[in-house]
Length: 168
Length: 178
Image 1 (cartoon, each protein chain N blue to C red):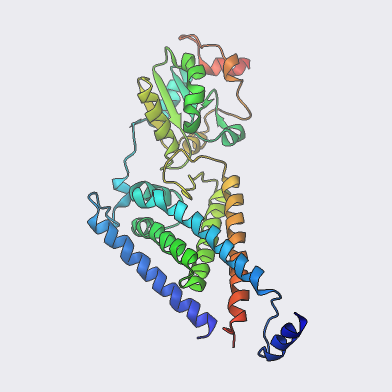
Image 2: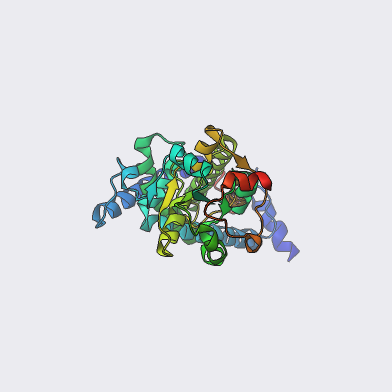
């Protein structure tokens, strides 16, 4: 319907980003958020159940001062849970996406730092047990993909929010 | 509401909410973790052995070393004569490795990192399988290299091709012949 489309364009505010067809952006936004939510919810489960084992893994990263290890080990899995729920439901999705991207960046950098320090760590990404053993480069590559997914989700969310005039 | 302040406000709310949930759930937990002393609460299984004792057993050939790290890391470098046995491959590989443990005074597991759990997990598997005198060399790969003790690189021989070592044979001699 070319007439409707051109009419819409005339009514758009100045500086508005053209997003083309609205459905793919909104649909992709939902799909990406849902994938991230599933990853976060899966990742947090074992760590919430076994906080002490997870504290050991956080300690192994040798990046935090001792008093912060327990605090982070206790809090991080719950943050993942809250972010997962928010990303799935769309509640405070922008904040959740920003935090998720920040979180994945921190995880990725922590792995890279330890790789170059020659410290072999159990990732603790999806499990708090010792059975999850793989080369550090595998973990780094996997976290890079997760980070790319989060960034893509942020970009898609910005397009969807931008359409609603949030930038005005 | 503009986007950046909105994201900032939402992030603060989410951080606060997760913190409340975390500490609330921990408070009602039967085995609540003390955030101040998490490391002491972590249970590490098994007896530990010092690097000097491990080196003595290595030199006299009275111990077998099991590398609990991944196969890739094993290939990059390992204690000379050590056998690769990641905990997750235990069920698959143990029967082939079992003959090599016979007649040894000690079975020493190691990985890398002071609190690396792999060596402890492997020690647990071995004990559950009925192996006696299992010891963990904590932070094994790092301390072994720091002491400049013998190391090797590359793949080990296929487990099926490994013959059981005689009790009086010295591991160091075996490795030199290879």
